[in-house]
Amino acid sequence: ELILGIESSCDDTAAAVVAEDGTVLSSVIVSQASLHDRYGGVYPEVASRAHVDKAIPAVRMAIEDAGIRPKDLRAIGVTRGPGLIGSLMVGVDTARGLGQGWGLPVLGINHLRGHLRSADLNERRVSYPALILLVSGGHTLLAHMRDQDTISLVGSTRDDSVGEAYDKVARMLGLGYPGGPVIDRLALQGQDRFGLPRPMLGDGLNFSFSGLKTAVRRLLESDPNLEAADVAASFVAACLDVLTQKCERALVEYPSESLVIVGGVAASPQLREVAGKLCESLDVKLCLPPLKWSTDNAAMIALAAWDYVRAGQGTDLAPTSRLSIEQY
Ligand code: ATP
Ligand code: FE
Image (cartoon, rainbow, N blue to C red; front, side, top):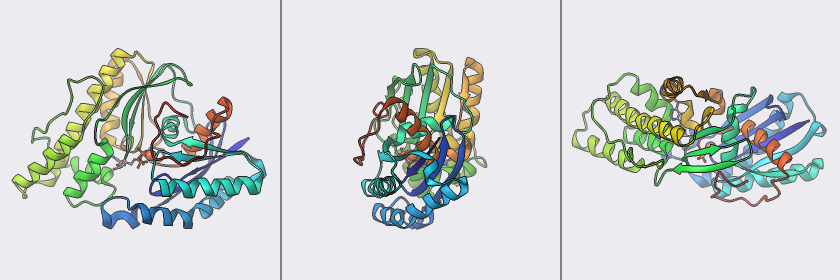
């Protein structure tokens, strides 16, 4: 029994075939990064047009790579939100058409629950209770899961997400889009020497990253000749301090067996390293998705779809730009 996942919430068109135990038979990601690079961010109209061109080829490739036929599928899971409405509509319409043609049920999946499940792809890693840190392009949040079916949001950002801050700082430094990987590489060559603010460190489990971003802008305005590597290193150090301290506090408040870090920023080698140390000192199991599935992909959507099948959820196919991680 297999599920076909389709993901088109932002700037990547993706399709994948996944078994109920998380085995990934195929995962195709068609990136649009080169189309958006010149805008320094995702240009929604360009994104939906590219999805129209790429959705069917991505599905065809995923089916071929998996070496299966549509009749081997049990259902299609498609991201219905949160994300860019135009992009989501393309994915949902494609899934609907295929579902009708192949006689398969179509399930509307919450992209955030997809990220959540990315940590169990190809191998079961998460044990419960678990604390989730989701750090993506659009979200930064902490959630506690008592068991696999119970998610409570326990903290989130009041303004920008960490990923967004990475992307904006990259843009200020003229490094292109997406900013995460370039900032990470540059930071390795610099020193944390500007004493940037650690916003809301003392303040519960919520986050704020817009002040940090502004501090970087002021710093660059004060002296345009600063070493970019030092700026990147100072920025990354501030982000990591905030993220690890919030995780530590959350783990005290919500004792957990595992700390699960998912979303695009979970691809950061620096974050992986500090999280590893934190978990070692607290005797908590660190669960990370394989690198290639930290950022958007359809395998995580297909694995989440299996949860929906078991829970009898996913009948709502209406694309929506906002959706909480607590919702299906
Ligand atoms: P959301 O899932 O909230 O809707 P999204 O799908 O756009 O947002 P993801 O694909 O999960 O977000 O993550 C993209 C973000 O991850 C970007 O902001 C990018 O800069 C960041 N990112 C990617 N790789 C790295 C890295 N190595 N280090 C830090 N950040 C990274
Ligand atoms: Fe995402």
